[in-house]
Length: 214
Image (cartoon, rainbow, N blue to C red):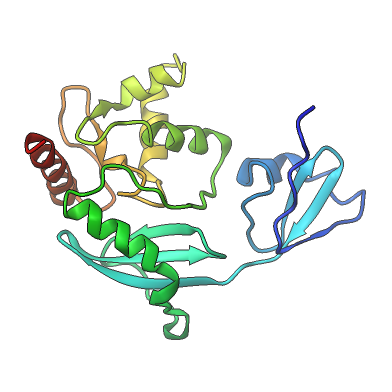
């Protein structure tokens, strides 16, 4: 028997009838109760519903070779990496110490000392998005795969499957750490990247050059 996961610390038990009408939509955004948003109805087991309160999002900046990145954390795990040009954040929530581990591992990555991140991340998305993002984490350092190949790995055969996968890849909340830059067009063309194609090209070149040194 699969053990029932514990609810997040920010959650409280909802009335037994609370989830009857909304459980499906709640599952779409929160897979198993581990990820919480503002007043999100979620569950840890059939019939066990919880209201999850909004958790404070803290942030810091990281100076990288591809520009200033903004790192976001909610309750400990890394939940976002933003490229330059994003919306401003509250100054009082800037807490570099809480994102020091992420900054340290990014230092190692850009220095060629780390090929895979060991950070705990919070990924809020639909089951389909979570499945795509899980596949991204399996793409080896320095390698690339096409959107069509990702669709095949997910056993998708619909004509629009590659496009749907591309949409999910483009919404990766923690780029670099989850290497969405390693997904390319069918002919190896660099297409679509939230940080811009120049940054995608730089990341791929960095990984390729580090592999050449091994």
